[in-house]
Length: 433
Image 1 (cartoon, rainbow, N blue to C red):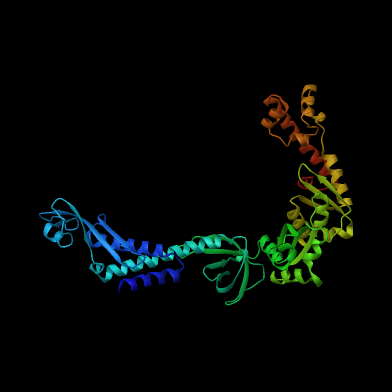
Image 2 (image 1 turned 90 degrees about the vertical axis):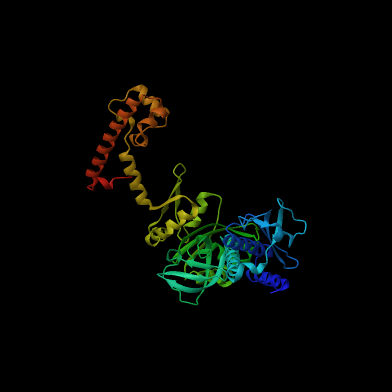
């Protein structure tokens, strides 16, 4: 093989593996150095250079000129040195050319294998980085194999896996099926990058709407929140940045075509599209749709909203197995409860009955009472929300006093619960508010 053929062979490897010629040449040089190390026991005195323009492979060994050679890998006689360097003298260093063929077929094969290995590693790294940039996007592939429920997906230059936990319930895939999925993560594996796919991720639903709804793609309509019970039901909250565009209508599409395309992709998952609002109460009312509620009770400290619904709206507001209220809570980020007016009234009566004023603590004096009230503590139940150390810090009362207060508060609270349980003829454990 002449120099031009060598160069063309290196270029072909670079083209086929989509890597730079520099990488291929650097790897060839490393391979030849490795071969020299095996042949001579060392390669510290050897230089390898591949000319990118001509393809010529130049190998030099730095040797000391001596009268008598003791280390052939590092020394050369004056007579032999004169053959390649007419100005060589004993005691000087010379550069002895080494023919490419001196390493033999096995060494050349080893260099070739190193090139292949290095190129493969570079290709894996490049594929890894390419898919890392695609995390959060949708990719389309074909089902290659199904292993214990997990689907191996051919993504072209990488292998994806759709774990059972990331599959929509009740959907089944066979070899050759086309799969559209969300790129959740990319892992480095010994056999190459492995792309973790998902069809249950909330952002998969969001990305599908980006594809189906031009107004979302163009930024005129924005998805503000997504909540999913994969395969069953989902809710998305949308808003419009153009007052002329109805965000809900844009997502539904003409005759429901846009939302139906997403529904089909998600194995007939029901999707509620609601209008987002910066007002938490309005947003929650929208989130509970299609159910209607009469009023909301907002507890900002605990980020809880209690929706009061009429008897005929109670069931749809809660949803099957609590699905509707659960999705509404996920969508809004608030803790959500749905009660009828009667249930709420009973809860309030129970709360009022169980509330014990701090005045009923047996050994409380005026100074302690004032300290507690100044700290915003007016009932035994509020007192029990703290530890003795927290109470000491909050009220300034001595630690032994706060510890005693908590013991007395616990006794009072238990006694009141027992009294309520007896009055209502229910077990004590059912008396919690």
